[in-house]
Image (cartoon, rainbow, N blue to C red; front, side, top):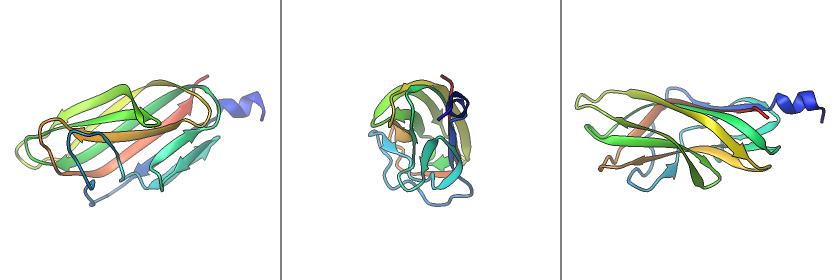
Length: 145
């Protein structure tokens, strides 16, 4: 693989117009299952069945997650970037209003990865939100170095 090809590693996993709620939402972080469509895939493995992107080469990666969702009224939801099964501590927290709104939020950061590390988004609720339906979301991973 040429050096130029390594710098082009990138991948996107997304969902559009989803209406299926996440199966379990509580204080325990769980991988977001709604990301079911493979977008761009170059030098990474975008796996819609596992809802994750696997890096092929060790390095620093820009990870961008954006999630639009509805859920339990007046409850707080968190979405975090995970590497393998551990949090990177890159996350957002969003509290939904009382009107049944669809809220959007994003999270991004640079994550240092080893070859074969998996990147995914996890969700949880800190105050008893039990329903979360992700309508539109994207997870993008881009190799920086």
